Image 1 (cartoon, rainbow, N blue to C red):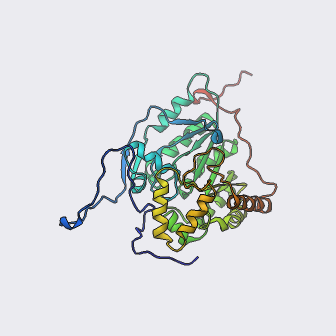
Image 2: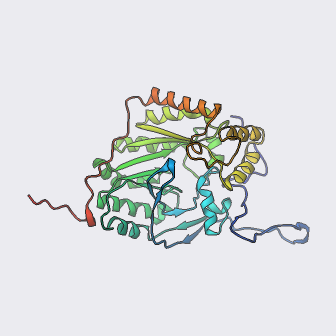
Image 3: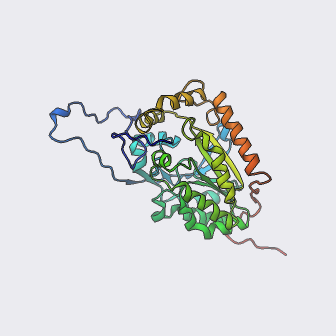
Length: 356
């Protein structure tokens, strides 16, 4: 891939702009630059904001994510992935889905306390809970705050199944807990790899671990008998769509048991953020890529139709589906993720006592 440089490209962050929050009446604008002695500057450092929610487990009842339970210890994500569908949720907190999303991180320190309350609900029956359904539970701040680690300790204490999706190697810090969970069939790990091309990865996901680093995570997890799946997601036609077989092969070679993928969708403010980004990052191919994305979503960048929003439709989407299926058949034949064990749940987190 040729390296296409743009002097206006803001390195180190994914989004290049702060889009307007539709929930706010006012916004900062720079209209008369000649009337200012200095430029309007913004704080570019990462900031943490505390939230104390009353509940931590969310349930999705949408048709294509039916009965998915998830926990998000953080909102916003320093990884800065340009395509992230979670960007829109930042607007509910009064922030922008653009640069704010990756530098204003909301922290839920009481997440472990709330999870324990959830497990102790009367008549609770164990369900698999996903870490995280929105932003990465192993983003950089987790190294210091250890909220995700505390949550995993509770999953182990109560013997409740958990599925994890991440693209950060911080997960290897918790290998001790994950190994115990895996021995009881209580954990699945999903490692997201969007591209093996380092130049593309740096622009798509500026503060993430390299693909080489993520493949090393897959290998380490597999060596410890922790079931691991690779998520080739999202697939962006014209940018990384040709890499699907290579990603699946590389993951399979390191012990992945399964694979999944989604086709990019640019809902809400993400359409504006992504369009601005690709015109700066890859100006020579921007319109082609945008048109290919539209062709997968009935001619629109925004797509909220259940069944199509993540899988796409049309000739380009169909070719991606075929490529994915063929790669799985070739590299992951006779492999599958083991089923969860729902019979080990320990009420109140205490030890099960035999009557015999």
